[in-house]
Length: 154
Ligand SMILES: [Zn+2]
Image (tube, rainbow, N blue to C red; front, side, top):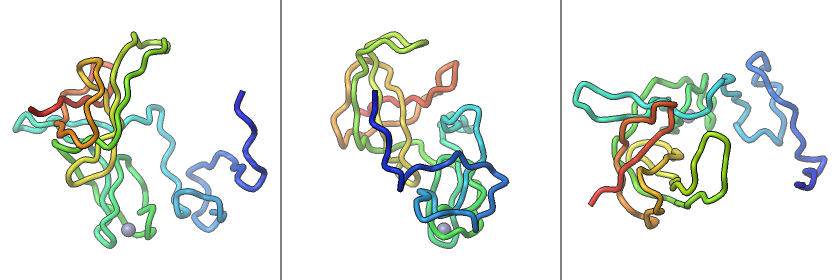
C-alpha cells in the first residue's frame, strides 16, 4: 500500500466547471484543467500520405505543445490551436512490462517518445524488447483498441 501524500499536496478532483481562478498553488497545470476524458490516450490520425500523427494542441504564444485537447495553454493560459505531431521521434525512456495486467499479455515494451515537433507520448512497441534511450522511432498505426504504437527505425 502506498503511503498517503502529505496534506499540503492533496488535491480534489477538478472538473471543467472549475474556473481558472480556482487553481491553487499545488495545481500542476498552471490553473488550466483539461477536459475529462473517458480514454486518456492520445489520438493518432492517419493522414492521406499514410503517415501517422498524434493530435493535440499548440500554443501560438509560447509554443507549448500537448497531446491532448487542452482548452487553454497549460504554460501561459493563452489560446491554443489544434495541431498534429510526428510521425517521428526519439525514445526518452523505455521498459519491458513483465507483470500481468488485465487485457495485456506480458512481456511487452513501452516507451516514452519525444515527438520531433511535439509532446512526449507513451507508446507501445511491436516487440517485447525495450529500445535504447535516444533510438529513433516512427508512429505506427494505433492498435485496434487505441494504443499509440511506434516502430524503431533502422
Ligand atoms: Zn502558451
